[in-house]
Length: 560
Image (tube, rainbow, N blue to C red):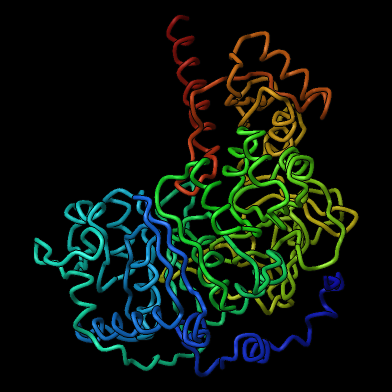
């Protein structure tokens, strides 16, 4: 492994972004094409680009040479429809062979790919299509009906069945159109500042905000794969995140394919038994995903330990903080290190416990700044960088972060840029060893009896109890304490949500944290509200408690 340099200014003040892009991906800031970087360069005899596992149990293998030819065919089809460089093509597709062709073909012509998560409803799709100005949507038959409810929907290309032809409603047929196109189409070169992806943030409030990802971000995605994921050319890598979201698209497709590593694409609802079988089939030794997946593995216990013992080399987690209990379970039961990584759609991954860089691992911390970034904790009012032990806003020092590519939202103002800093909106705390611990979203932090309590700490303590599978902690309004801590807990099989268990859990947290940091109220719901990518939506639970408190106060006032 390579050592990480903690003196970020000295390490990166002379950082040459253009040279890094050229050296790392053999491109040029003045002449780049994402399909060339992620496909053409690796189109060599025998080199596999895609390992496809379909929901119906079938599977297929596709070489980089095949993907290159199919990307050219799709680019020729786009050109026949008057679509070219800078235009937006949207994909409402599951994890499939056709999805990868759509992405690569869109990039090949110099156009911009826009993902549409397949769990979205018509209104969410409509907002994204209208905001992006997409010229074309590629859908599968299962999702096509949603587009009927989208006003002014652009032209649609539909994948009917497995390579069907003849589509109703005037749609183009994906494979029929592909069959009529040449496999000769030269990649359209663009500058490193030109966009190749159009993403939407999945914010907790307001409409999703659009942001353009420039081609030069490919080097940042590749460096994350190498430095943080520890990806090697001979790894069997599986990123289980959906490519309808940033982590799956940036680091399940773009980063690995820029290295020439095969993509393992698994369609269908996540099922632990099937996933274990697929991982065994493909000898997966490098795994990445969200904590939700890893908690499911822990809940299965011995089955996972038996199936995956001695197979995994490294595991990476992103999307929400990784609880220490998960880290310990992977070490004790699978003898593998699972590392926490932090990022945003706007930034990629900027704070990591790197598998391929030597630094101490601080249990429960999100990690250290990724090379090319300087990440600090700020006082939001004064923009003063805070010392260790003081919570503040996690921020990126733009003057010393040449790998940072985000410049703002498309056609939309933002207050996230303050002076030389980009403020993430997340609360964090610097540790004495230089690592940074995630506390929570700035609006998730609980103020109780004058203390500020991060929900993550309480959740982590709860997860150490054998009865708890998942936990979400929020502040509930309280006239005496400002807020009290309330926990919503999903239980392991064999446990019941009794008052006795609730009291046991309260004492468990109190003994592990502090007298002020235990949940005074505990509720045992059937499920927790989550985003489609698996993040717990604490704001829904918090608003629920606000509404309950207001209703109670209204009743009390009415009763005198």
